[in-house]
Amino acid sequence: MTSLLTNTAAMTALTTLKRISQNLDTTSNRVSTGQRVSAASDNAAYWSIATTVRTDNASLSAVKDSLGLGSSAVDTAYNGVTSIITNLQNLRSKLQTALQPGVDRSKVQTEIAAIQNQMKSVADSSVSSGQNWLSVNSSDGSYTDVRSVVAGFSRDRTGAIAFSTVDVSTLAIRLYDAGTGGTQATTAKAIGSAPVAATIDFSGSADASFSIKAGGAGGTANTITLTKATLSSAVANIAAVTRQELVTAINNQIAASANNAGKVRASLDGSGRLTFETTATGATDAKLDFTMGASATVNIGYGAASAAMTQAVGADASAGAAGGILDRGTVGNSIATLFVYSGAGAVDDNSVKASINLVEAAIAKVTDAGTKLGANKTQIDGQKNFIDTLMKVNDRTIGTLVDADIEEESTKLKALQTQQQLAVQALSIANS
Image (cartoon, helix red, strand yellow):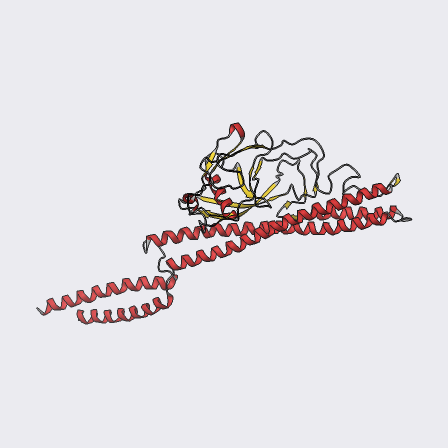
């Protein structure tokens, strides 16, 4: 009888010791890793969610790097533009000086040539990450009018991934163009006749669906559905969908479409009008058809239900005057080549006045280019701040799901260590 009781006590002490050792291993792992869910076996659902969020954060980190590079490129171009505006103002002063009676225009021409050379040097030197947006060569096969900066990453409820971009048009800001092929081929661009409302209420039966097709007769139309059902997972407030949220949702649906993915993109112009543009150039491929859906009740700038837009068609490249803002035109009639004195002598006063008007027009165009770059810079910086905030929110989400309370786990670890010592002593007593 005594032997039986002794064996029972020993088995109980051993079972207790094993349970304490298991709990001790779990707690020690949490203290050492800082996580209460470090493997799928700890909590499969939390581990899966946390892993997905970590993956998204890695993608957002890459987007943040892309925005950094894009911001640097925009800054470089903007600094070049502001420097050249100063040069143009100096050039205008020299031309005005040339109009004064008795001025030696050959001396003024020396100063004008120096300013022209300086402007070209500034434009050629405005390079960031191998890209120059101010001095280009449109005849180069690798040249593109639109430079896209990856600005956003999203994953919808089905797991589909989409990226948004900030598009910078070098066609509008290039100052010098060494291309000799004439005018550039253009894309097909559909622009709404009216701005999109600042916010749109899609909480009821509001519908702004439409069909869009790129490529003309060779393309296939896709229906973009903009209703409460399709937008609720993509916007913050279905009752107040902002313009940018609308554009993002449209681009996400286009990217997920079978026929037009990568062929067309949506954006907002400076007046808030919804714009669609093909990625192909030239009349052969750059064709765009747009028709509002039969059930549409919301005007997003293209009219009411079933309103069809005349097919937009891009223009092919053609021969003619090429060049950028400062070198477009014939010799003597562009900023890069104007002069007040040549080997044939001084030019007449009317020619100098014409040059002054040319410089005034150039200042306005270059200022407009600086404005566009400034807007791009603001958009990129705002997106960088948003990505930073989103990554921090994701980190907090991961922490909520998997992080351990170190203070609590450390206290538990000490208690378990004490229990383990007592269990060992109890087993020893039972065995003896």
